[in-house]
Amino acid sequence: MTKVIGVRFKEGGKIYFFDPGEFEIEKNDYVIVDTARGLECGLVVQGVHQENDDKIVKPLKAVSRIATKQDIEKMNRNRRDEKKAFDICLEKIAKHKLDMKLIDVEYTFDRSKALFYFTADGRVDFRELVKELAQVFRTRIELRQIGVRDESKMMGGIGVCGQPFCCSRFLSDFTPVSIKMAKEQGLSLNPAKISGSCGRLMCCLAYEQDVYEYLNSVTPSVGSLVKTPGDGNGIVAEVSLLAGKVKVRLDKNRDGVPREYNVADLTVLRRAGKSNADKNVDRELAKLED
Image 1 (cartoon, one colour):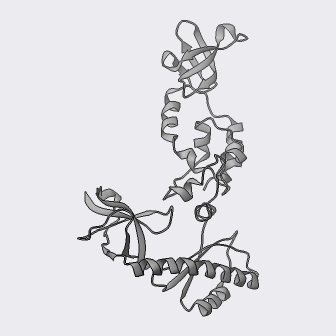
Image 2 (cartoon, rainbow, N blue to C red; image 1 turned 180 degrees about the vertical axis):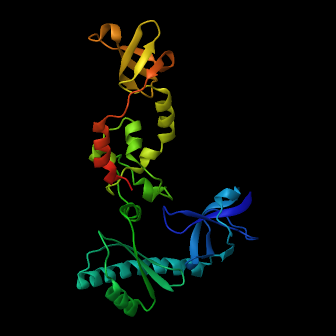
Image 3 (cartoon, helix red, strand yellow; image 1 turned 120 degrees about the vertical axis):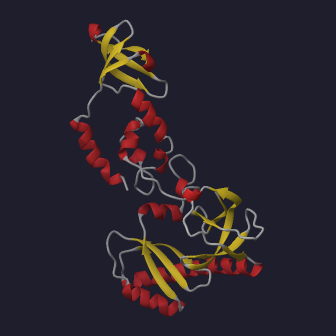
């Protein structure tokens, strides 16, 4: 275990651990820390606490100092100037007729670098753009192409659930999301219903995946051959995964109404295989995955 604090540099951004040293640092303080981009001013979102060593990227950097009033004013001034830089860059992009979409602009704390984040369908020759931006801002310019998930995280918005995007509200890292998750959770495979505003599968599909994986491992799927308690064998016709129940069409009465049984009372004789139709659907929906 190591004593650390958790620092965030952007709202909804990733939390980074730093060594508080001998400083008395509390949650919601601002601190100056040394990062790969140089000195940065960040908000303490996790006060001094012990963290498992396997969650810490070594070597652990120490806090340089607690931010002063002047440091915070400088950070806020940088944020205001980022908005101006954004508008200027938009004009330059239009001037050079570049097929790219500007998403965000960031200054490093010491203003030694300005980072411009954009999305584009392919490669963009922005060499002339960089030259003009360097002449305007008199600092090092870096353009970074990002993905559609990162765009949604930076831009924010309201999801189909009526809540602000998870990625911009509290997710610090993106976790892989697959079509398999939607299928195992019994969701509609209509792209419009399982994809977010970014056009990729919704991040929330991963939240309960562990539970569904377990339930699917102990529950026979539709089409499986099972042995019932006292009524002989039959084919599973319907599954209520969370309720732990299935409806079985009995061999002795194939045209009759399926009977309901608890999963724990059934013996699986043969699990249903994956149909070719399912494989075709998977190929069509693969483009929603990241």
